[in-house]
Length: 113
Image (cartoon, rainbow, N blue to C red; front, side, top):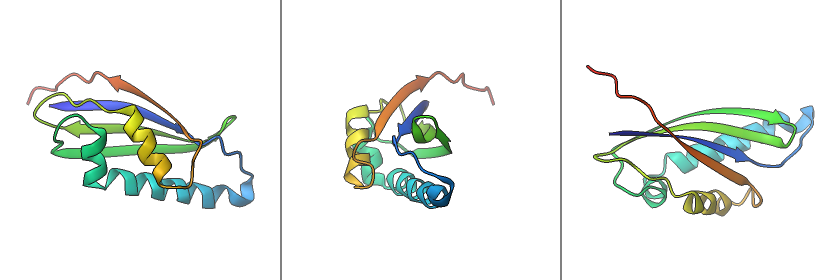
């Protein structure tokens, strides 16, 4: 069963053009290390996940550097994403101690085969 979430990471980091590319790479690397680590996935989800797919859009908004991610989890049953554990995992990476994380479950209808 597929469970989809929209997760937004607000770094609150305002940056100018000189450091924007480097900051984007830092955030992209942090997200990649987070969502490719099976132990992190197992910790932040409620059930054993068989597959995780992530798409991210990074942008500099008025509040700072932001990453909007669509997380697709495949599991035998509906997956619950623990926002508290996800936030702790992000902050444990060390770079963004004051990052705000928001999540929303997205209902995606099953497509018949």
